[in-house]
Image (tube, rainbow, N blue to C red; front, top):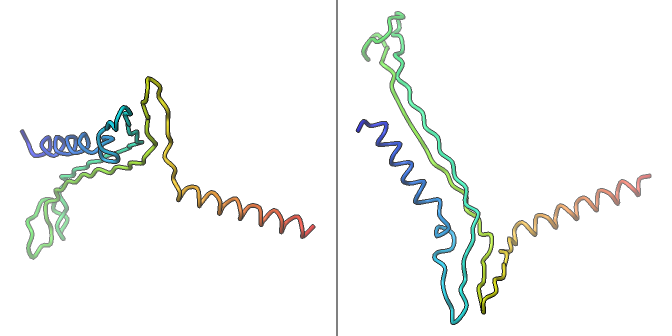
Length: 130
């Protein structure tokens, strides 16, 4: 295998291991007669790049070696992976019935409240001006 496919395989394997609900919640578990199944919203993305063009030296001749002339062969590569995981809630299974219990994002709730207060204050100020 060449270096490029090894890097791709490594990134793909890392993505597969990372994009799982266990990264946020862990395994489903049983307490007494109740089963709790965690649910998460997990998103990810990756990117890769590679280059191999030669740079011209100071005289404009491509492919000159490093040194007094200042030219060098260009070559490089890179890649990366990113992920975002947010808890969505849990399914609670008890006595043959299933209930959904959503996760409460307190930060999102606070920002929403602040935006609502700001809009109300602007509307009040605008109405008072008239």
